[in-house]
Length: 170
Image (cartoon, rainbow, N blue to C red; front, side, top):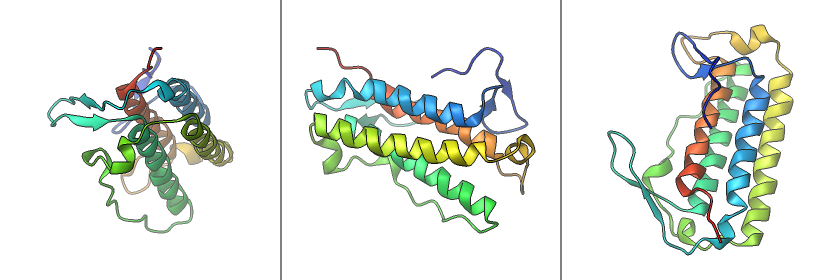
């Protein structure tokens, strides 16, 4: 998912544009689920993806769903902690650096159903929460941290995991 041409870069952090941050998160989730709809055809061979400056990482349908879900959960916890003026949980995710045995399992129609339900519910929570904020709240800076709007736009980077698997043709 590439930001529109009218995107502007904030002082630091993710680029934002005129879209509402709730729409950005929902659009990313739907993008991931469109790709995931093709994954029950996956042949079980993992994809090795190179990222500039890093070793290749292995991606599979289950790993892509796990990483998108974890990213949404991680930043939802951050958002809620900031709103509640509490410290966020320290980040100890191993993320893309690991591929678990569960990541290597074939991706079935039942897995797709579970992913749809899980990710759409998370997107709905973001939509409800982000739409409850004023523009001033979405753009407020706190101790140099990204704004809530920037966090939402950063979540679009989660599409990378699904894009690494891509659409699997018949």
